[in-house]
Amino acid sequence: MSVPQEAELKNLITSAGVFIKGHFIFANGNHATVKLEMGNLWQDEVALARVLALLAHEMMAVSPNVILGVPTGGQNLAMAVQERHLPRIPFAKLERVPDGKKQDFRFVTPEDRDLAISAKVVAIGEDVVTSYSSIAGVARLLDPDSQALHSFTVWRRGTVSPEYRMGTTDHYLIEELLPSFPPESCPVCHPKSS
Image 1 (cartoon, helix red, strand yellow):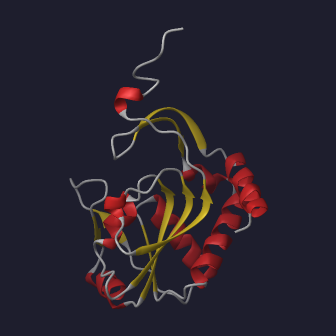
Image 2 (image 1 turned 120 degrees about the vertical axis):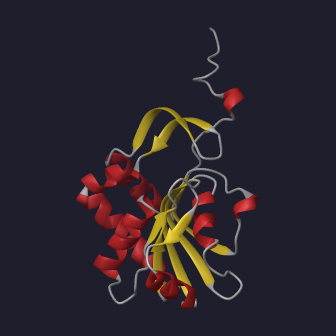
């Protein structure tokens, strides 16, 4: 995507009210004063339609045999892409493992598992990536040695951690790092006196 297109898309997504200010703690332990709430995107049909069309365009470029999504935000987006733009490509559903870590997933049915495992090219949808741990959680269910794994994300907000690299190729609509802090440097937990 060209820089002007990315800027236009960023403005469109931002106008949908996805930036939330507060104090947030991510799965990797880092803190932030702003987060992206992509759930708000569903309230703006113009922004949502543009995002879904762009994700579909990116996915079609790799010709996936199956589409998956990181539960729940990424899965909702990936399902909408599949339903609206790529209905001939099957969808395999995932769910979080009860009482597991945030990155622990499983297939909903044996048929979902068989569909995903038998695919040569897999598209994995996600709404926001901070460290890439959620994509790695999905990739652990697959076989990067025999499958081409592609992740498709609306916004990369953080630096991908090397330990989460699992043989996937990344595709981002927007790559803009947003500040996050180790707990000891968090401006909310440790405000500087003026």
